[in-house]
Amino acid sequence: MPQGRGENFLPGADWSERSAGTNAPGTALVVDREVQIRRWEHFSRVAQPWSCTAAPVRDPTTGELLGVIDLTGHADAAAPQTLALLRATALAVGKYVALQRLTQTAAEVGPSSYSARLTVLTARRPTWTVCRGAGAGQSVNLAPRHADILVLLMQHPEGLSADHLAVLLDDNDLDAVSVRAEMSRLRRAIGARFLGSKPYRLLEPVTSDLDGVLDALATGDISRALELCSGPLLPNSPSPGIARLRVEVCAALRLAVIEANDDALLERWRRTGHGS
Image (tube, rainbow, N blue to C red; front, side, top):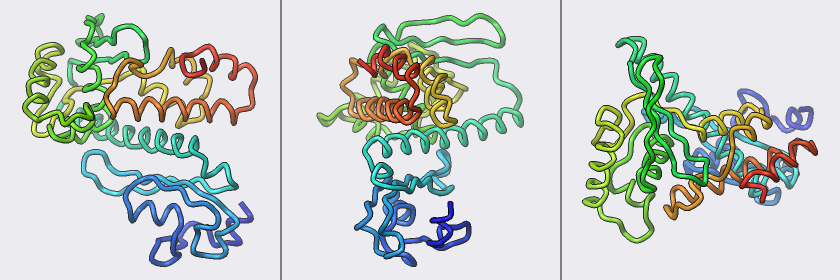
């Protein structure tokens, strides 16, 4: 936009923290997490009329920094809902990178005959559906803790150690031995071919209704996101990693609906578990 050009917010400009001082895209790269910078917090005077939110994007497999997503504007650009929306977008971009790599690898080694789908946006028991080739899938109900683990593994395609998984699953110092025992039970429940270890990770293609919502939000298809989002993410799960993701998805959906300024979308959102 013209204001951005006047303040050197252009491709090729150096907005690193070292060169420009405190600013959302530059600071996000330094601290390696999402940040929000309000007008007066900027070091550079030319940036002080603006507020911004930024989230780094990394290759989920190698950890390589791919870039940073930034939203700059007036006060709303640093609102809590904006942070949730950028987190969801960065997550969707990371998952797209992982999917592209998985597709490329599959093309090199030959197609996998197995895939699975996880259903977690429901007040009912979460389900795991396994398909072989183009045949009909076979579904099983999942234990609550198993559903938590699978969602977390899908958000971390690079894999999780037992210690990291323990922190995401429980606030009360869950030990690694308990995590390993739970992973053994999960492997028996869904099939050994789907789970790898050291670190724990998914080995076969897995999709979920949550993925569909995040992808739709990332592309601005709010109607599709509402269609796919039949309720909150695992609403009865107390796991901190799931609770954080649940809040982020709800906030991102709410912000997208409000900014669309569409009465029909707002009414559809109110009928979901997020809008109640």
